[in-house]
Image 1 (cartoon, rainbow, N blue to C red):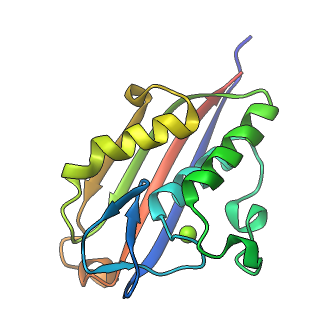
Image 2 (image 1 turned 180 degrees about the horizontal axis):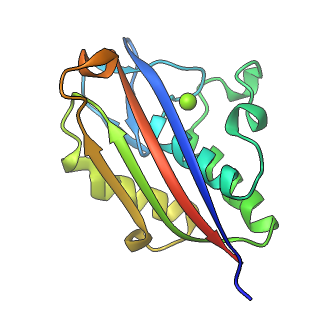
Length: 159
Ligand code: MG
């Protein structure tokens, strides 16, 4: 009998000067970047929490604490591969992933296919099973003022 498990993840980071903007493993030329202990890739952080949530493996704050200096500047794609291994060790495969990123700027559509290809490579699943959608916050709130970028992710696992 096939068992299905659904998971949900959310993350937000502030935009700051002097930081690279890395989203879905793509280094985007923007002038501002997301602030954080790691590379602050908000898409990958939300994605990891959705996978961990589906497998009931707590969250990335527990697995990769930001008080641990070894995660300073960490490449989130490397952390994603570690999350994939944890999920696999529990016997789960990934059915599909659906991500929504909320950013007032920059326009993300030119980078979507590269982000999906990066995630596909890290998780070893077809990019057809990885959806990334982008929306703005209609100029409202801190995201609308361009102070930060947030992401939501849903993941379905099966075994
Ligand atoms: Mg984060």
